[in-house]
Length: 382
Ligand code: P1T
Image 1: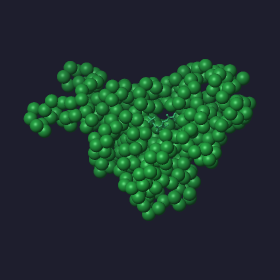
Image 2 (image 1 turned 45 degrees about the vertical axis):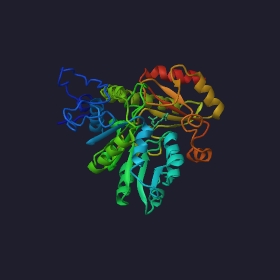
Image 3 (image 1 turned 135 degrees about the vertical axis):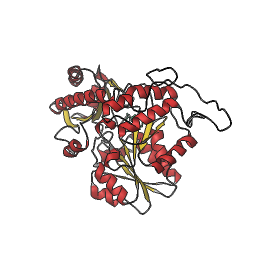
Image 4 (image 1 turned 90 degrees about the vertical axis):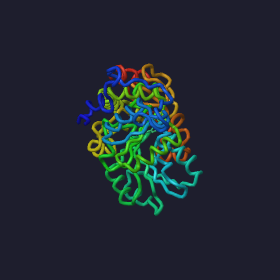
C-alpha cells in the first residue's frame, strides 16, 4: 500500500529497508548479473541487469507512484525514452507532434523516424481545430509537450488526450517542464507520461536519464519488451541518484516556482524586456488553463529582449549567478539562447514560425535566493 500524499510517496514509494542489513536506503546494486540456483531459477525478476536491477526497480516504482501510474520504466536519457514510445509503431504509421518541443525531440521525429517510414505532422495544439484536423486514418500516436520548450505554451491535456482516445491513437505527454508534482497527465487521459529525468527529477545537474510511466498493462508489457530488447537502460548509479533526488522533488519545486514567479514579475516590468512568458503570469495566453491544469507555474521563464540578438548575447555573457548552459531543472539557475543552443537543430523557418527568435532567452530559475537572482539579471541587463 502506498501512502496517499505526494511528499510521503516521494520519500517512501518503491522502497523498504534492505531485507539483509536493514539499510534504510536502497543499495546501489552494482552488478550486471545474478546467480541462479538451477537454470532459469532466480530471485524475483532478477537474472540480468539490462532486464531488471533492484536499484532501478525501486526508482521506477517510486516515479510511477508520483505520476499516479502503476508502471515505470527508466532509460539512459530523455530522448531514449521518447524513442522507446515511437518503437511501438510501424513504418507507415502517422504521428501528430506538438509543434513546439525540445529541439532534440524535433530532430528525433523529423530526422530519424521520418527516414524509417513514419509520417510526422507538427501542429499547434493550443488550436483545437488545427489539432483535430491533423489526424489521419493511420494516426497511431500523439506526442504532447506542456508547457512547451521554449515558448511555454500550455496545452489542454484533457482536450488533447480526449481527442486522441476518440481517434483511437495513443497519447504520450512529455511532462518534463511541469514534473509530477505540478501536473499528472495520466489523470487527464494520457496513456503514457515521459520525462527527461536529467531535469527537475534528477534536479542536481549530475545525471542524464529518462523515464516512461503508464497505467496500461498492455502498453507496459510492450514497452518493457522494448526496454529489454533495445537496452537503452540507465546505469545503476544514475538510478540511485534519481531515487535520492525524488525525495526532495516537492520541496525543490515549491522553491523553483516561487523564485520563477518573482523573476517573471520583475522582468515583466523591466525596461530592457519586450515580453515575458510564464504560465503563472496573467498575461500568459493560457493562464486560466495553466491555473486549472498545473499546481503552479513551474521554474522556467522565457523572455524577449527589446534589442534583439546583441542585447541577448550581452545579457548571457554578463550574468554571474545564472550559468550560461544548456539544460534546465537543476538547483542552480541556468540561462540560454535556444536559437543558437538547445533548438539550433530546428530548421530556421520553423523557428521563425514558432517565435523562437534571436531575441528569445530562456531561464531555468534555480533555488538560490530570489533577490540575488533578480539583482544578477538587473546587473546583466544594465
Ligand atoms: O537530454 P535528455 O535527457 O535526453 O532529454 C531530452 C528532453 C526531453 N524533453 C524535454 C522537454 C527536454 O527539455 C529535453 C532536454 N532538454 C534540454 C537539454 C534543454 O536544454 O532544453
